Image (cartoon, rainbow, N blue to C red; front, side, top):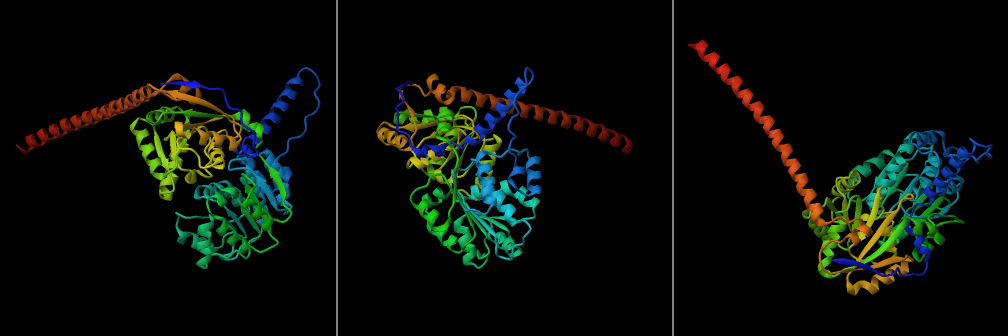
Length: 489
């Protein structure tokens, strides 16, 4: 099989391309560091003008215990979105932010919420702040990010989502919770059971609002926000601002201050997009060759059955792969994500719903085995890579009859994708590796066989040692038996 590349198609720019990279803040920080370094170097030869002081979290007006904990965690310089948002949020203004998961916005809304609630106490069943997220994984990630700082100001936080114990959540609310990080469905269930009351909520945050509208949560979200008292603070973050999102903004936010992250230029410089046009018989081998690459790879498919099937096929080929989808229990999803983050799994085969909100560092390739449903889903998938200023590659496999659909998808997403035609023959060619870092299946299988051989050798060594110990023990017992026999005679 060989691969031929046509000229990259020039596609019109689209504002929504801004949503696929959350690296602008890291780039800005890097530029600041570079500027300081140049100044220091010049100072050795001639007097340099004093550099502007670097803004720190201590300058933003946050509580001292929170600032101290940030410093202990090595977080001293805020990202641009944090520097812009936190002062307005601390002033009690409604915030409208455009940016996706991983852009640094969790601390942007979380730290002001902690600051506002510190020193107060919540009544039973009545939290004082609620943060709504579309998925369990994102809710847990938000809580994990904020809990260490909440502990510093004595605030109690609880995750409320499906797939976890409702009894445990009811017990926590009975004892009093300051901040609820919740998915809409489970929070509504708790309210209907009388376990939760939103009448004391001072701050309501809507994270990934566009995803919630895409996933059909909008009626539940509006039902919940209608129960929050008027006059409180509202913060809404979304990747796009259109349709239902505009309705939420006009209905619930009062003169919001807007902040936007992720520049289109960042997309161009940190992420590359490619379309591989493959024949049906070559699709599985090409998928396996790409999945066998070194490093973390997320593979997107359309269905849960497809995720399980492809993950099993990859494992049979010697690739460390696992599936992630909504049909799994929460415990299984958590273990799979942990294995992926820790490097025990290199290729994660996921559906769109399961992967929403997932933030894993070091993903440098996204492979779309099945086309995304629309351009927003494509941008969401692509956003799993090229994070925090790193580079990344997004590869989409296309069968011949899917070309028009995928080309149109790229145009709507506003990305410039290279088009490559894979032509007949073997399942791997060097040109594929140049684009994706793919490895030949022969190499992967040889490595797998070598690992198996090493494991077998280790087992033989262990068994040999056990045999030697057993032999020595048998000899000792034989000598003891002879002594006892002699004594008895």
